[in-house]
Length: 180
Image (tube, rainbow, N blue to C red; front, side):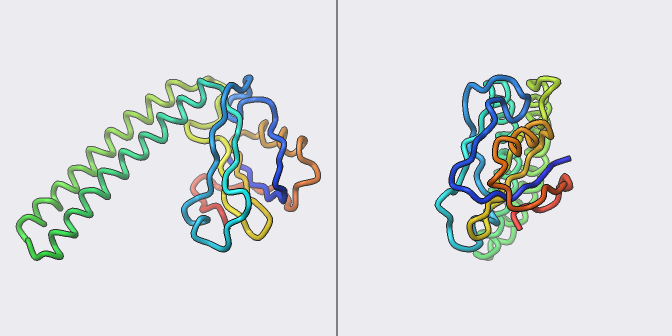
């Protein structure tokens, strides 16, 4: 279960613990807005937030991101090549590459699944998610939407920033679109 909150501030106080597992932070990861949010409205002064993480969590987040990237690359690469060949009326080659696209997509999904399982193995029992534990859903005027996977970190963030909150917290369903 994820929690969403709108804040209005150019400076936020991030709790001094890893956003994922709650351990002492050793690095920061960037929470950038979703692709949809980047296309909407004028760009605010803040376009990302540096969120504290421990090294263990930063590593499993990187592996999780890599797994997602591999799956997308196989699908878009093969599909794009098939489309180019179709536009050039190279029907036989297009059919071949369309088949290769399906194969690449399936291979990408398998590799992605294996890498995602590996990223989960690097997680501590207290970790909130294999990917980012804090996401930046985007902005609307001067307010920014932040989505938290860890309830403990969400509550610590609210306590550290009592005057910046401009909306009541809400629960975001796992696959619900954020940033709107």
